[in-house]
Amino acid sequence: MSGWLTSPHDAAIAAIALPNLASELLEPVLSTIETAAAGRLGTITLAALGIAEEAHRLLTFGRHALSVSATPMVAAAVAAGDTERAAGVVCNGCVLAIGCGVVQLVVIRLWGRAVVRYMTPKATGRSEAEDKAAAELTDRATRYLRIVGTSHPTSASLPHATATHGGWYH
Image 1 (cartoon, rainbow, N blue to C red):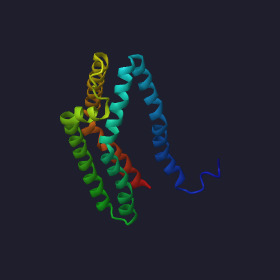
Image 2 (cartoon, rainbow, N blue to C red):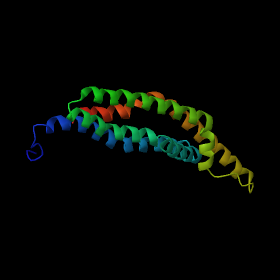
Image 3 (cartoon, helix red, strand yellow):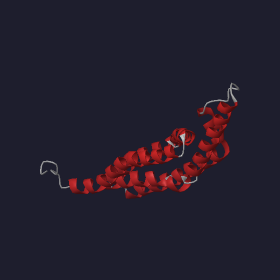
Image 4 (cartoon, rainbow, N blue to C red):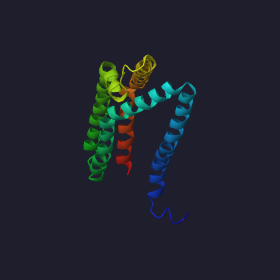
């Protein structure tokens, strides 16, 4: 293990990286648990979960781009000794992230059903059972997306805060 820690900064970097690594490793495990729980509720619920999660990923793309871009901006300012500029990037980024979260919440509340409907099978009229299943799938996916979407304004700033923290201390 001594070959791993060759720099005096490695311990500080590991202290930042290990919680992030744990989070990245836990995400698929939690997703699997969520999928298993939804699968026990039936195939329509499982399909609704998959559609809603993909719609959610689509709608949160911009927020993640913001957090990824903040890290090097903060790191560059800190490396230049300009902590005031670094603090400004952090503050502006948090405001933008929360603003993105609010916009995402509004989009989900107003147009979430349309996004889900675009991603779900359409009623064909071939059978009443198929049409009923398509409508139920759309309803469940929309409800799930709206529930998850209520966290956007507060959760929007967390990836940004994590990214800027990484930029500040690297």
